[in-house]
Image (cartoon, rainbow, N blue to C red; front, side):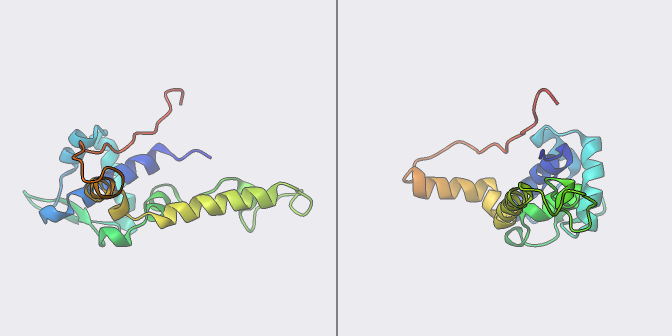
Amino acid sequence: MKLSTRAIYSLRLMIYLADHAGRNTPISLKEISQEQNLPFRYLEQLVVALKTAGLVKSVQGKQGGYILGRDAQDIKALDVVEASMGHVELLKCLEPDAPCSFRDVCTSRRMWGMIQTRITDILAEYSLKDLSESDMKARLEQTLLGGVETGAAMICDCRSESS
């Protein structure tokens, strides 16, 4: 399974909004595009699905932009991934109504199902607050670095160069 660019960029967009939620002002797609090095036109498409899912709200006007639709602690990575690309699906044959002539005799289906469940469980475990730069930095400083100052965290752009 490979997460789509839509899912990865949507997660980066949402983490950026979570990182800046304390500003109490909407954030423009232009700012997100520049700060996250993401294509503006693509972000315009992504926010449609995120807005439909209730994960972001748009604010109109000169100082308009986007804010989180719910508290960062209440939005899970799985919510963002599913809003952007649909149900996490490792293999089509794992779907309840999938037509598969080997369903009853497939010796690996159970293993694939467990892998899919673990992936979705992990995505459901992490909230935007958990993934936000400010929260991550504070936890790193407290637990791993004993309060040593660190640089800003960078949200991974996990695209493969060969895709």
